Image 1 (cartoon, rainbow, N blue to C red):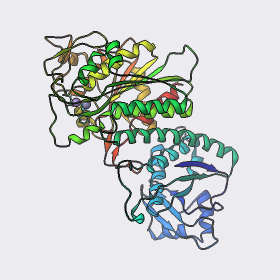
Image 2 (image 1 turned 60 degrees about the vertical axis):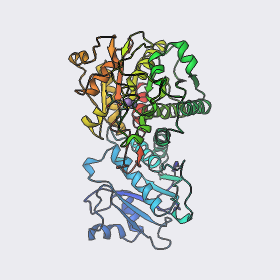
Image 3 (image 1 turned 180 degrees about the vertical axis):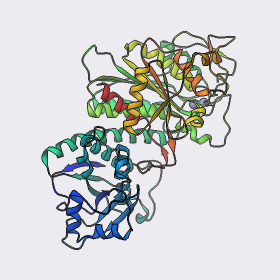
Length: 505
Ligand code: BES
Ligand code: MN
Ligand code: ZN
């Protein structure tokens, strides 16, 4: 999907579909929509008067202009909801609704206007409005097809929407919109890569496949990729990651991508993502019901790779490092067992109470590994605990950390991206739930506050730098409820990461 800005009036642009957003409950078209309506002979106004289109969020209507009235073959009205509720998320959803409307009409191109960009509130600048529309459009165009055959009947084949043009004839405005579009499209393409990696089955998206994807990103963007396989991991002393990987034949990997966009010697911002490509639970095996969903257990790692691609594409002016510990968690005669005491990269010993609490083991080693970069800040992300999905459901990421300033920054980035994170308390009292009688720490604190004790476990392996942890167990995949989503992996928090990095850079 290509998003562009065209310097023209919306009535003069040749397109199969012109999408126009309208607020809820406003009978009188305004500004550019008023002049469009005039050329349409008052059709929009009549539709509004009859009450056939009310502008509620997600509502759509198609108009067919008479020949030569305008250059668009169709006009798609898209409801924006109430004017006072307008925000970036509404624009994201409206652009997505327009793209899905085009797909439904079997059209591969559409255009739209950014008339609300005029409003220029502090949060919703024209730049931000264009960015949001580009995000919504590119995200909505994503479909998973990789492991499906084409339908026999070509009419059954969904149409790929390939071009979305924002129309703006005033040069200064067009240039600002263009900058917003560049950012939004890159963020959404990164998020779509995360989704694709998440959606690919576990027999395709193996640790090796994730490593090859990282190498491809490095080639495309000029980053440095470092991949550690089993023998390098042994030499490095990544004992907790290797303990998880000892139950599978699939080679584990530690994937490191380094983007040097800042000055030399500037301390890097580091992203760490859980890349558990299939989680059967190990000897503490999971129930088979819905176990197939555990292919999504690498979505944290996928978000880091998607974010690194966007970082490279945009040339973010900061040093940014992405790290993905990747493994399967299976069962075999060589698998770790409950009660085993294992080592770790940091040196602490860990009693494995539950082999299904494996994410924190591989992340512990990755968090210890990144000390060598002397990070300015580290954020890790993981589908870490089912408990987080119970606590916060589908609408928020669990957020913890050792630095209030960083936690606030992440909440801000979450609000801007629509990938909202909400803090959970790391009270010291929770820490003793992971005291062990046989090791320095144990890997499960039981059911109470399972998300927080997992956070505490990670914290025990964090060096002397600001750190935050995002638990995405509730949000990493879904039914495609929002207009810019589709069933399967969401790609969250790829765009949150970029919002944070861009604010920091
Ligand atoms: N990958 C799972 C967490 C998960 C569960 C994510 C459901 C998404 C949906 C993780 O490795 C896990 O199994 N966690 C255990 C921890 C427990 C054994 C302490 C859990 O949440 O039950
Ligand atoms: Mn598990
Ligand atoms: Zn897991």
